Length: 200
View 1 (cartoon, rainbow, N blue to C red):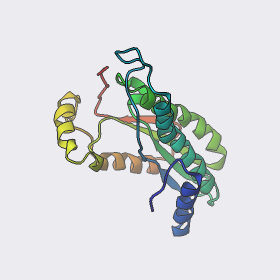
View 2: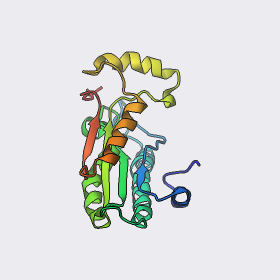
View 3: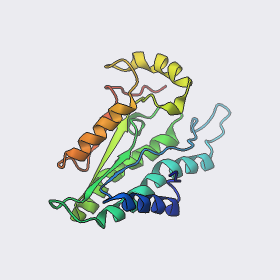
View 4: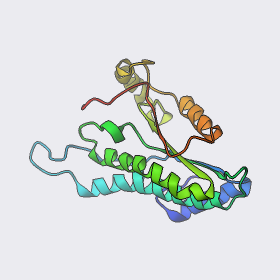
């Protein structure tokens, strides 16, 4: 099913559908949405649009919080196995650490996701629920379509090793490792080939 991560009813319905299929123990949030950008003050001295900032925060931070809280409630209803009920995996970005020029709204949202990780893990520890965040670098996903080839050509050589964009299967492999490693909790893991975003 499709769902709006910022809509409580949509996410509740998604959780109910997952629970109907079996015990809900894993939540992986990789949703996207519109993001605004631009310098804080443009060349004409005009400030960055507040509405665009709010929209970006709504999709990339509030949406993550909404899924996090509703997934936590659903997972907490499950019977524990060896004192463990499950894990919630959120997606941030390396922009949380070194956002580029024009990325204040997006970097703020992803920085918020990073900031929630340890606190959420501590909050949910009495329920036996772990929280881990993945902070990807440049990943080549189907969302880019034909533009992906141009991005690969531009970004691949800039990534220390391997000199290419990340692949969805590599993200999935890390998710599997997080799920299987019960001692991994409250951490943000960069998945970026040692890339550090330059200013531009």
